Length: 111
Length: 113
Image (cartoon, rainbow over all chains, first blue to last red):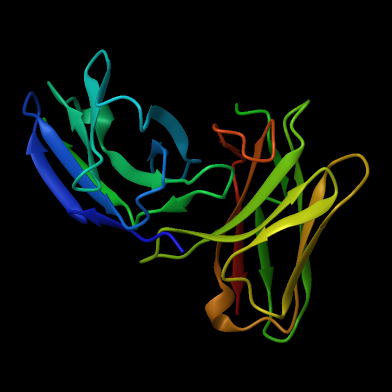
């Protein structure tokens, strides 16, 4: 089955800096890669996703890049703000199978 | 609010007991997923139902079972509870069987004492 590795497990940045979280997947047939944000004590919420036919997708301060050859994808957050502090999960899916999640990255943005 | 409702929000019980967690998906969503989230673990997929039928199984223990009813709500039954079962249990729903976006409920926090 699919295996998703996520790094780093924790990431501390200063407000205004950029943050990058990386994930690798094992199944070369995976074609859908969402990112979820989970604030403390709350539910995971989808923040951005990308399909395998696209190399990059951007939504305001967040962007996701996908390298199918290397089987990795990354979340980029620019101009970080304290409210970006949360746990971020990447996931991968092949066809209509279920999502396989990474173990999460705790992002701490210091004012 | 995602539209996915989970009850109860908190559950405290003792080892050896049995509990039932309930999930109502978003209106129109046919697929329901159950996840377990422990402190040092990510979101561990347990099981998926689509329109009343089991579609996929993850790392679900034999002591755990689930079902989806004709009105599409789902229940996760946990029996012979152990201390290690203490976790946050999330339900998510999506429109289709392989629906891209999964909407998560607020979760049920289970504490086994």
